[in-house]
Amino acid sequence: MLPGPSAVPVAFLKELRAGVWPAAVASSLGHYALGLAVGAVLGVALGVACGLLPVVDALTSGVVRLLRPIPGLAWVPFAIIWFGVDLRAAVFIIATGVFWIVFFAAHGAVRGVDRDLIEVAQAFGYRSAWARLGKIVLPAASPGILVGLRTALGQAWMAVVAAELFGVPGLGQRMMQASSLLATDVVVVYMLTMAALYGLFDSGFVALQGWMLRWRG
Image 1 (cartoon, rainbow, N blue to C red):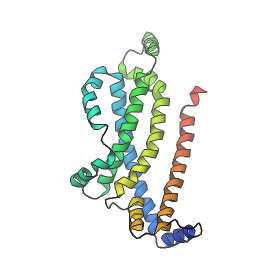
Image 2: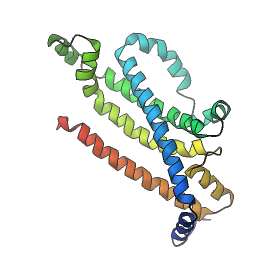
Image 3: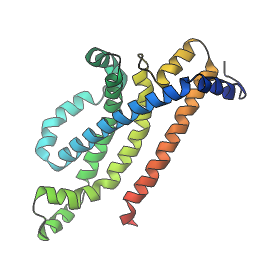
Image 4: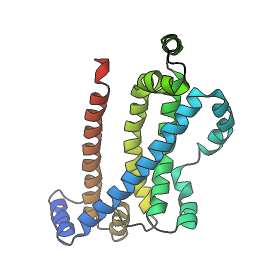
């Protein structure tokens, strides 16, 4: 059932000429970008808030322990009920998977900031919480937050397939259609497509990460 190497380029050309491959890639990239952005922004915001403010951490800890073990696929029926089979449902599934990774990365990074740095900042006049956040906490926590974001890049890409299994157009839907017809050469085409796109995203993020953390070297 595994296609020969020569069958994959032929299948790719057929998908490309039919316009199926560009449409699927464009659709999945839209889901990916929106879901990643929503999950990352919410995860960083709440993670930083919980790491900085013990009151917020105490108020949310019970909810975090309750919801964290629930896998992303378990939310698929609710996403369909709440949003229907459209873009919003896919974004919800992807954002849910991204959120927890970024949340715990940001929370741990902020909690790990050396308290001596904050005391020194206060001694030099940074007495407001916002000033300390922007000048001390976020720069010191940024390496840990960026590691979480890089992990989230891969998690979001895997969640794209799960988000599109229930009928939202994209790479996941096309893979399911091909697998149901036992067109394994087409399945491999989209597997390789996802691997290549993730490689580009990860390489770009590593370059961005190095530029943002250039102050460390």
